[in-house]
Image (tube, rainbow, N blue to C red):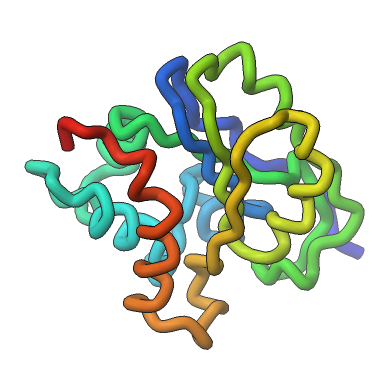
Length: 170
């Protein structure tokens, strides 16, 4: 019997234009209390490549600096599930998931224009968010479990979706 795990709080600001939704933090992320905390997850490397005109090395920086950088680029992070039962980190092991109230972010993020779903499990929840009238995009998972996609292939897919939401001053 597995215990109920509780996810992370949203990482957003009033300037957030694009919200990236994962499914639920993996064991390493929960332990560190950081989004995409697994060393082999390609999330931060992908964003660095897309929003890379930055004086800092995002991947080598502290979580506090990465979070600030993310918000400065008008991005936000959260997960589709607030809690679940799961053994290990695989999405396929998620049971008894309780969804997050993504609609509650609309007041906190008045500039929100789009949601990008990081992986197929998070994208399954897109149908429940159609009433938000935001652009919605499915992205290949940045997880190391998604080994079928090379970094370059993931980057190309992510760039296509995120590029229109990059700051012009970047």
